[in-house]
Amino acid sequence: MTGAGSYLTTDAAPSERRRHQRIYVALVSPRRFRVDLLGVPGGNDCPVYDLSLGGFSCGRPQEIPTAPFPFVLHNDGDAQPIRGEAEVRAVVSDGRIGCAFVALDPAATERLTRWLIDYILTNARVRIDEEEARAIVEGNSFL
Image (cartoon, helix red, strand yellow):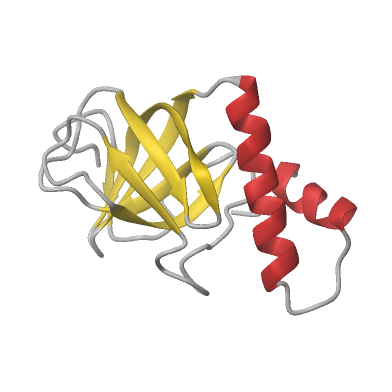
């Protein structure tokens, strides 16, 4: 079931396991979060479908990286992007790749946490407070 690299190739979604809960950020606004996969052909301005403290899934670039790569994660609500390094863990037939963070400094992790808490508080269908939103973001994955 492995592809050309060390990643999983599957028709099942979600296919890669994450420690933290995935937040499906594309359900409300497909342009709010996007990522540049630096040095990857076709990897500029890819839409982000889900995001967690452990990684993200995004649109599939022209070439799928087989080694860790630098990325720049953008949030339309914050002028300062998050930079780090990720690796592909899954390739899904619907046109997505699942990536795990392999390098993300503590300040970037805290900013990402804030982005996700704000996203949940803005888009939750039930009333929740910041403590509950943080528990979702920092909690274990249900998937």
